[in-house]
Length: 107
Image (tube, rainbow, N blue to C red; front, side, top):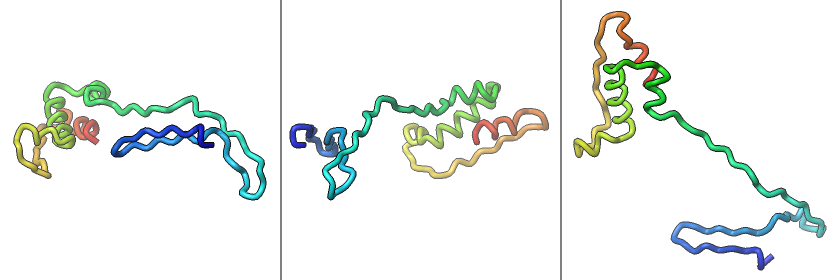
């Protein structure tokens, strides 16, 4: 179907629309009609602020959470200019101060 071909020339992009009919057999000339795609699904991942609200982190927990997640996102490279693969961080505190809640939010 030469008239149904659309080419977009770019270094990395090739789009070809070949129509909505696909042959069911190489021997027979019958064709099957394929319905057009009319819907897409989007998966939304929670943002850092969504997680802070979900786990009700206090201000100190939020700071620690942002340090860890920023390191994982690679944002620390911008500020330090070094490529450190490991973050060493201690989360001290007595019982009931929210250390486990912070760890749950990070994971």
